[in-house]
Image: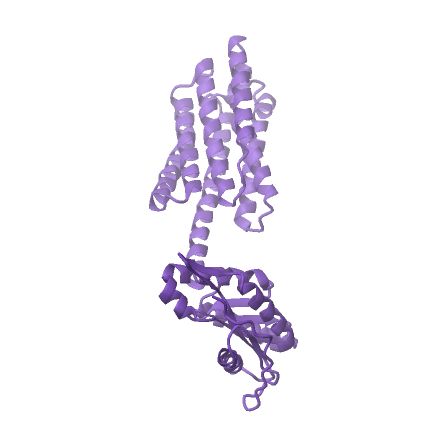
Length: 399
């Protein structure tokens, strides 16, 4: 009886985590990977309860049932873990392991080989966890929690594979794999319990981390353009300017404004306007480098801080974006407008703040607006009293 009580520790913790993951999934049903965790731990509870309460090691049918439930639980957990990081689950591999395990246990039952049945019981879920560790490892994630989960699954698999050998070396019999019959098995139950709790804690920490990152992203990323919000952009700029000053790196600023955006909203509707904002944001994101910073700082106004580039080089980037912008079309019924944008470019000079350069780039932008729009204008001198504009070739706004 004491050993059976020890054997109940693992399903008790598994039930706790199954309920917790179920609650988290019910709170946000779009997170299907959490449902996988809940299903996996619910299966773990069921398999352990059957083993402790019913299983006697002599019933082939019960062995097959317990093995199948354990396999399903492992598949659910691995599927949830791989789905969370975007790895496609190899369902063929899962099914192949399940079919082989079922065939193995069925033949063992027909040939009346209870020891082989016990081996099968320890193999199916171990193979799944080994496959899961390989899948997560192949994703090459740098996140500490993902790496910890890889090692935990690998330990789960290694322990499952080695249990029969341990039983033969320590107890000289596979009968010790039955629950509640030996101290060896009680120790194994504790090890499995520790590993299952550790794995659940890692996955729970991953859920919390994902939630925090999503909330942080919602606070810093403009949902329409996909670029930084104004507050987040200015915070990033401050850090970048400090780094650039310390390292002596040239930095430039591009201010962009979609031409006649109010007319697009008025004539074609806000849905089309939102589509243009989204497309323009994607266009900017696709043209900048990892060290550059881009944000939506107003309704149709955007800013780009260009790292390690002077104003002339930033002008080339702005011109490329301007040209590609004309590939965006605002269409609603018979109305078809080619979208254009105007750009002001200025470089950061010694002692200049973000506000100082923004004022220059913004004045250059409005010089483009007054000069016919769809241009790039550059401030060649970082001096508010001596602005010199270098406009690009003008392409009229088409309709």
